[in-house]
Image (tube, rainbow, N blue to C red; front, side, top):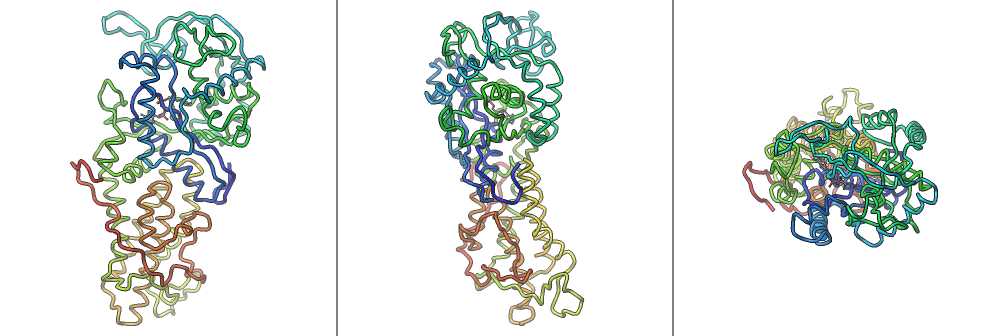
Length: 553
Ligand code: ME8
């Protein structure tokens, strides 16, 4: 892992590529926002320019069947749904640099080349495969992952334990990948790179899987059963398994087989826990077999449920992100998902939770603080006021004799918390704990409100020279806190952060996370903001949401 505080080389951050069989929902958006926040954070920290890839997974039986059900051809369905994903991610301000569709010729070429590399290196063989096949999961399942149920007509059938989908006994000639030979190399890779999968419970889960038998993997399907996919290069009777096809997208975006080595293996994949095995077992094994290194990092997150239930079309409880942007604004909804989503645990969604959180933390705490500290009634000159050392002496210099000092121990605690915040936030981002970074910032915002409230600057008399010094110092400290919060929040709420920093007259080149200093005057250094005219007042930072509110934008 690259150092928490300093810049580093550019990396390829990726979201999963989303199935083009149904429109986006908030789970997809959550994956993309996590990757986007990491990408933006790296950029603001001064890392070499990186890439953020996303896209749509367009092949396979699932898509073929969805197209039949919709009465359109697979390419028509994919073009339409892929467009919806691109639109939703663009609207969500996901700053992707690459959007890949697996139906594109560049991807087909990469997959066929990858297949040939596997074949040339002896990693594939043809075998007859028989077993229980789960179409929605696109894989064969062992007996241990099956349960007996009755179908809608009351007949006994077998279903996948994990998803409840019915499975069918299937026999076919397939190409097999020698996955079993990679058990030890995979274990060694994980042991040598203990931070490659985060959070830790998922790393342990993968190690656990690798202690069990690792059977060879079927990596093609008979063309007669699956036409919508990429043909095996040397055998047109077979279609490449959709997961091999899909995983290679991470190489196609970096120009495999020509230019990928400029990026590979500096890849950081953000994935949901449902696709962990594909990314942490199959993908590294396939890469090793093709003569490439495994990805540098896999960041795993859990799922969103809705009112305690799994989101599903049949339950009719799928939450559409675009309607949420209308209800809560793009930044409000980004903040909610990233602040409430905990990678280790499933999170439950309901509308009231969004309203409560964004009202309290964005409208009241952050917006209220900006509003109060920039009010013309206490800051009539609309400038970044001066800090006075005599009012707020360095804690190490303070001996109780400084007559002007009114700073309390709580004030010193606040200053210490905010000074350490940038490093804390960086290390939470680095550890894929974005929600913790936001929790720390929210706590500091609350403490800054306490600071402001405690000293009641509106009661101070600006005409009294001693009181004016103290009044200016209070406002200076508050604006410095807000500047740090605005800077740190850029990867999560880019529009609000921009509004906040513009109001504080922080120039674009002063918004980097690299060398973000807080309260330089407290440390005896010049403050470039002191005396600066504040930016124009462009209104309330974030409007409070009404419970039943339909649209704010
Ligand atoms: O699995 N909560 O695509 P997909 C949180 N095409 N995240 C969720 C979620 C939920 N309820 N539901 C989905 C695929 N996701 C494959 C991926 S990658 C080479 C191929 C997120 O559209 C989660 O990250 O079913 C999941 O892995 C991803 O969306 C893609 O889901």
